[in-house]
Image 1 (tube, helix red, strand yellow):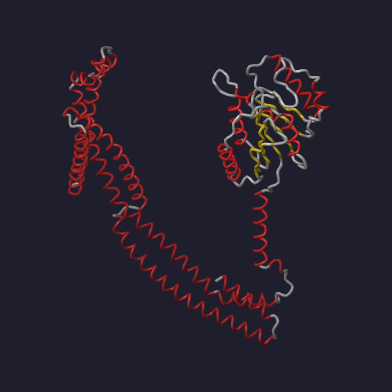
Image 2 (cartoon, one colour):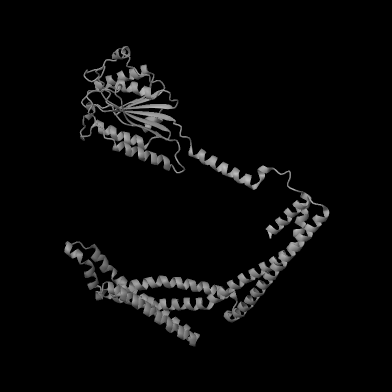
Length: 521
């Protein structure tokens, strides 16, 4: 219907450019066209309404037979009580099955006892329910008397069962608290039941009582649901049909008024005039294109740029001096390799990672072990970053490197690192995993104490790298086979060196703590 009115409005806007006579002809055409459509639709709706009315009459006649002289609200309450009895029956059924299983336990049937218990439970309950139903059909008064009698016997059986079980309580306590050999403890249950055979009598009486009650509850549930269920179902169908009839009447009225509404829309369009001065940017096509462009822009923005935000160079000592072991037979070199794996797992997006080996020819024959970039785009669920880290970690594990270098050229490695950092405007970080015992150009391994004045010799030889605006971590600086005095003097030397190099020495430590030191920067 909405489309018909929209079409009439558009016809009016188009007709605004025509002469008056043609406008009137188009108006007459709109009226006749909508009258034909309205008549066809109204005829269909009347047929539908008559069918629904007949169905409502049929249901009303059936409802009179189902109500049995009671109001529908009484049937609703009766049906709900039937559902309550059905739920109660399921609970009782579980208890009955459990008690019957225990009743058959003395016969040693095992799994067969469970099957027999289920069979007795079902047969006994159904038989009792069928018997009660027959009595109720013949004489409701007699049914009420039988029901009260069964409830009385069930209550009596329960009381007797409770008394018998309470007498067994003392025997159970003494058996459970007795202490003896393992052989006697194995036969605790057997001894208990052999001395308290009346327990089975109590369980049997309880089973019979529950069977009686379950039969009554089942009969109540079935009788109530069977009587009131169809009434409520019939009422729901009647309500649904009445709503459909009301909707049909509303539709007939709306379609009857359609021709006048179509003419009114035509005249409205005629007054608005043709679509000559409209904004082309508000057209549906333009709106769709704008939405596509916006979605693409958001996707590209969410993805992020691939520009690096930091550059990280890791220097790994490959000299023989890092092969020293601790009390756990762990070498410094192996711990450094594992620490690189830890760094890779925690590396930030937008990092340019390079791993360089410290050898005896670190500068003139540099060993660039790995050169990889981690893009800034994490992905919507960080899946892209995780995949890049995993690929990088697998690549690192596949590289086989050994600490077999005959010397340690840390100065050459530092100068080579400064070249790697050139022309990079991002944050620069240098991580050194070494014992810092340089042997090439200057022997820092043999002296008992490293003289800080050696820094002047290093400067004279041009061995100080340009590490300005670079954060430096020297981690895993081993203390194996060295005195505190030597290690402390070596730290003093390198502290002076990085100061001369213009670097920011964040940490110089025998430990390997990357996260905490990184945050302190």
